[in-house]
Image 1 (cartoon, helix red, strand yellow):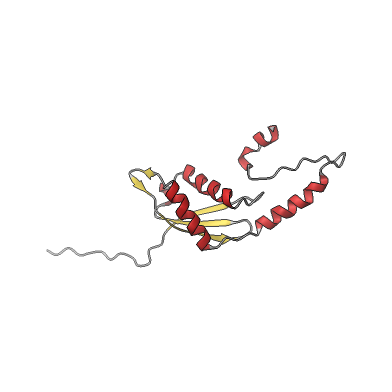
Image 2 (tube, one colour):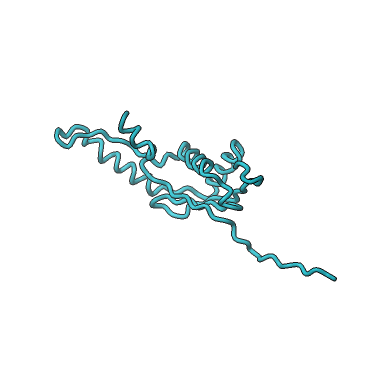
Length: 138
């Protein structure tokens, strides 16, 4: 319990109790390592992620920051090992840290990724066409 508390910043990591001196618990180590390795290579489709994002945003929309709410356009899994999720947002600076943690915790609740750190990249949407400046008529 004390170890779990000391390692609360990696609460997603499994703990295997073992003793190098007596050999107790060493039989659990390799199966756990294999499970972590398997989870490291899991891939979620963009469709799955976007449906999850819609349900997460519906139950708890992004908060207002300086009077405006960040709009999350879509999410995709950019890399596999480690799983890296790219989230396209109207303004990443308007997405507070607590909401980013909410997204990760919600995703881990449905897809645990045991023992695997998740990387998140929040980036602004690129304009497809640059806005043309209007000329004022005199």
